[in-house]
Figure 1 (spheres, rainbow, N blue to C red):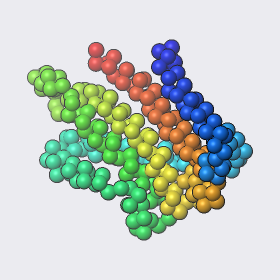
Figure 2 (cartoon, one colour):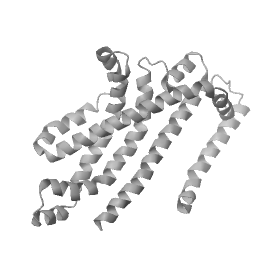
Figure 3 (cartoon, one colour):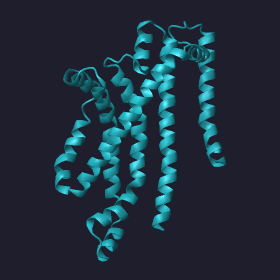
Figure 4 (cartoon, rainbow, N blue to C red):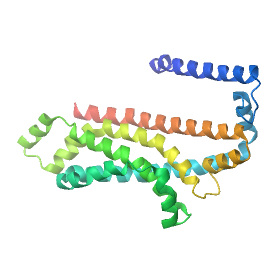
Length: 253
């Protein structure tokens, strides 16, 4: 814990210096609030509008968590399937890479046309955002399993399923959690993008309304909320990684 505190003071100090510089610049150069509000103005607006903002925040959190769980479950399931079926992997994996060349913001209007303005297109957007990093990271983790362990298991007469459960899956956990950390931060971005498709509430909706009304302070409130949510989700995955991967390593010893 003390080691984490020693490492954490540097980014915290840099963030504080950034806010101080921002506050001084806005004050000295008398920048209009509608153009660039000061940090104190953003914080005060966030506190003043909390009663209305927390409804949007709750909606985005719900979308993010649901889409993250669906996307990660799909990504891990596809990665396991492609790993166990090399022929299918050779056919499908290049298509997965190619699909990432299409920006999700381009697919979003098509999803609305195909599935309407309900929850389904929103979940699909978040799922697609989270799917790729977790699928690729999981497959890389399987491929990086040390060959000698697999060789020893085969010599002991282990089946392919036993090799997967006892060797490949535990050794892939660090890579899987790396993908989960990326997907966790992407899920918030995906939720905000999905809310631009026609939601009645959510941080994306709040940001759109604030931007159209030139309430730049509220736009920054939404930006700060997105950053805090992404950092919170990332931290939760890091804690789960430390607990789970540590336990698996102890089992392997």
